[in-house]
Image (cartoon, rainbow, N blue to C red; front, top):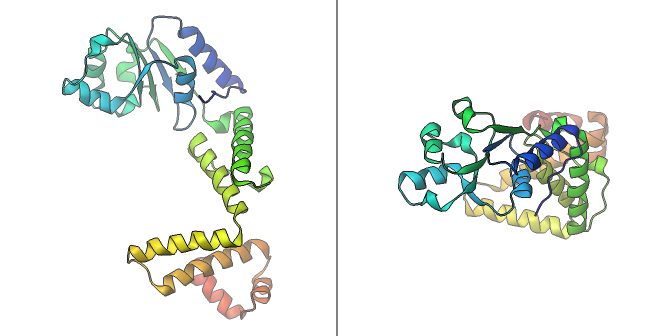
Length: 245
């Protein structure tokens, strides 16, 4: 089971509130953006509860495919996607509910005496640094690649979701050998041909774009790029304009 990272002050407070309220017979709502750790926090505090997706449970209740009397406490994810929230929670009034939502929901606010907000990773530097270390160390072991953290392209647009994806992607790409890269391209080209949406010219453009972007990143001027690539400056300029570079 994953552990909720709580090195920053705000996440420590969220964890503390969750731990204290877990001993009380009250409904709890955990809010925050995608990927901030809402589910991980609940799983750590309530590891053995029955878990439902909000929309799926709503359909089960509507079609009378579930006996709610058999539950004392349940976990419901993504309640902000419910269609009729008030009616839904009216049917759950005898059950203790631990739920997640991307934001606080005013129409059912009174149903949740305890509300816990988890801040985005951009506001939790200590947690972000720890997660970067954890994910990069795991990825380096998997791909047998030694890479500096400064060389990894970090994306936290969706917090932990894109953070993990960006780290694993960066380290995977750094670890590829020439033969592995050829195999990867062969797989990509095969899918393109199977979809019948490509041509030889379009596939060659992929190579050109990658080469030009790399050269532009390394060399300071178009003159240097042209010299290193061994092509005419006018030709280089046309290609850069063609690909929007």
